[in-house]
Length: 231
Image (cartoon, rainbow, N blue to C red; front, side, top):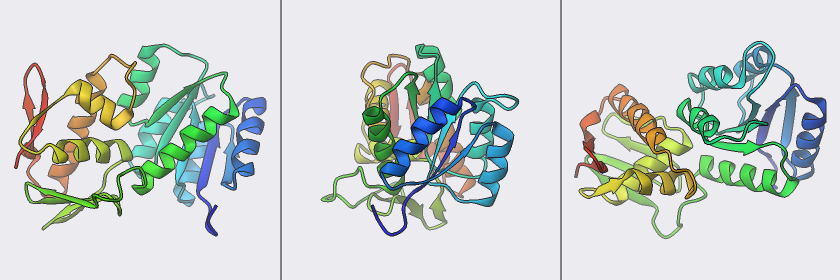
């Protein structure tokens, strides 16, 4: 672990869960804060910059979904949902509102640490091949090492999932990429058959491209199949 360990906020109202999760993360060398409700978590997030948020969905007061929505208005840091509900619909809802991964309770320490490491690598750009540092297409340059997307109007501020979607599209610029391939590239979940979440994230990606001064039409819809990044 580096001299400046990643900072993680764990939000859950079950003491047994927060004790287990915080102990496991601290043992790995992470800097961990723990709170029991969404309101306190959001207030803390406004004060500190966290590298990862671990959120229970069923929280008292503001639930994990609403907390994630609010966090997405201020940060692109990865969000890992924890939940006792393990249906595909629950996973899809969590992803559509801006979550990055979903871990069903009960879970083991090895799986928790593996998910956390993967999300932190994605957040810093560490999951991309070192041999291919940048991609340029449509007036944008994607730096896979620095985890930035930019052009003549400056940077586009993207979440890890949005970045990976854009990376997949730009690697295949001019070609159609299916929703299934985008889902696999950005989430790595072969078993998740619901592809609507891809459409939701593509819409967010286009909105951010446009808000940053670029043409949202760079990402084209190919009806009945998927999306294409315009060269």
